[in-house]
Amino acid sequence: MPGSDCDDTSANTFPGAAPKDDPDACMKDEDGDDWGDKDPPGGGGPNEPQPGTDCDDTNPNAFAMCGACNDVDGDGWLVDCDSYPPGMPGPDCDDSDPNTFPGAAPNDDPKACMTDKDGDDWGDDMPTSPDAVPGTDCDDDDENTSPGAAPKDDPDACMTDKDGDDRGDAKPPGGKPGVVAGSDCYDDNPSLNPDNNVLLTAEITSGKLLEVDIATGDMTEYAAVDVKDFNPWIPTSIAVSPLDGTVYAALAFRDRLVTMNYCGAGVPTALPMAHKKNICGIGFDRAGVLYGIDGQVDQFLTFNADGSLKPTLPLTFEGKLLNVADCGMAFDCHEDRLLVSDSGSGGIYVVNPADGSTTRVADLPNEVFGSGLEYDPTTKLALSCDQNSLLSIAIDGSNDFTQLPDLAAPADDLGFGPKCN
Image (cartoon, rainbow, N blue to C red; front, side):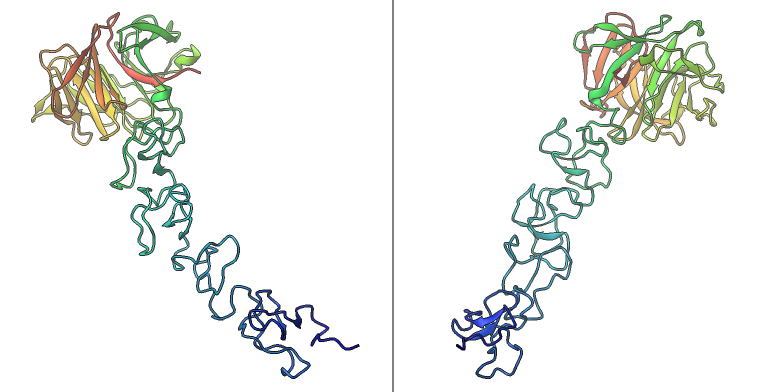
């Protein structure tokens, strides 16, 4: 007995196949969107599929505005569709930008239209797309910069943490106004940060490295090196390379710098070339260049990798030689400044490596300090010692300082060194 199927060769063609066009007519609906193909096989006669209104029967998302339903920017979000596939709650809010779409920054808002160029799931706080909602990412060009990137400094602030140690870069690159400086002086090295540093002074003659407790003045043995081949062993200054954490020391009555692994209790190694200077302080800059001060002839020194010197420069203040006594050196990583302390004048100075000229940033002529110097990136203050005296000093020209508890023993140098595992 004859039935009513107008095309028994097609499973997509039968009466009621396209109920949105006609619940009874025999139509073809290949894409299953309940709209009938507007140009089905045959001529649309009495026993043939009837034309519907679906202008694209191969696309379930297009049935009225055919030729649309596009994804110009290729981000997976469609525009101008008659309907949208599951998982796409709405159209793309900007089909010209693959980084802008609903839910692009789920850490800010899982549904809002935002821009996330660097792929860190935080939305650009100043998007260029007119339809994008501002997020909280203060640098959407850098995946290492986002709110809460450095929770050990601040769980909410927008900071840069390139080395993944949860401390923010003290000098974040890019100069974006919303990026907050953290306490990590060397954000390329996860082993150098405030959590992995210990404040040390090198004891004279013994080879011991003593940990300094600034809260109490206590000094306890932290590590030691074998100094039997270095007699006398009189360290005047220590510094840590930001490149690999190597510890350098300048020694009185020795014309070569030495390096040492104090965690391994090994023998210090003298650098191959002599400097032939009376060094009272050494310090590295961010790039790993080592500098020093000859306190006897008031010279600013720049070292080569082998321990030899580049041409020396006079160390000057206001056009005259800075007549230093005991001194220390440190690096202010927030401002990219080399610092020198002088126990004679009671000052801390910023040195210009290009010409050796200095600018005074702390003037405390009546206080006892200056033979040792270190910069504390957690407080942005300088720590300076001389014999048993220890001060915490502002280096902003205010001359503010705090007299800390006296040290348990005389100290001539200070330096943050890596902790021993």
